[in-house]
Image (cartoon, rainbow, N blue to C red; front, side, top):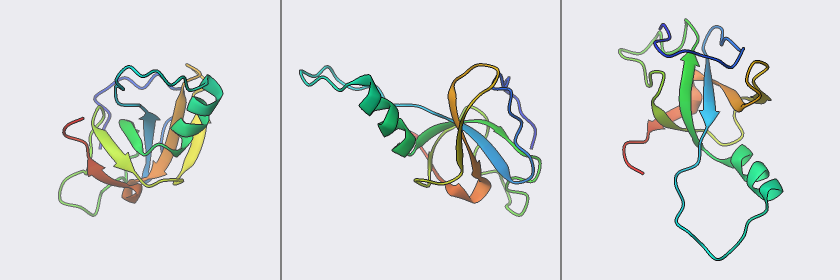
Length: 107
């Protein structure tokens, strides 16, 4: 599988690894304030991500890839390795291809 989207993270997934970036769905306005430190910890538990790039062996044994760069997906909670991209300092996670188990089609 090749990457059709520019990966500016500074990290290239190898083998069956998939680089994903966390995202949060838009939330409606609320009167409850959630401190940024709590939000940062919550995003590490969040299961929603956007596929940035997949390694060359990802989903090789499946008829079609489960996800392509740019797809919004659900990933297994606590799977993989959380990191900050050395090139852009954004939060990412490197997961195994099988840790992606659903596509998000509607928010």
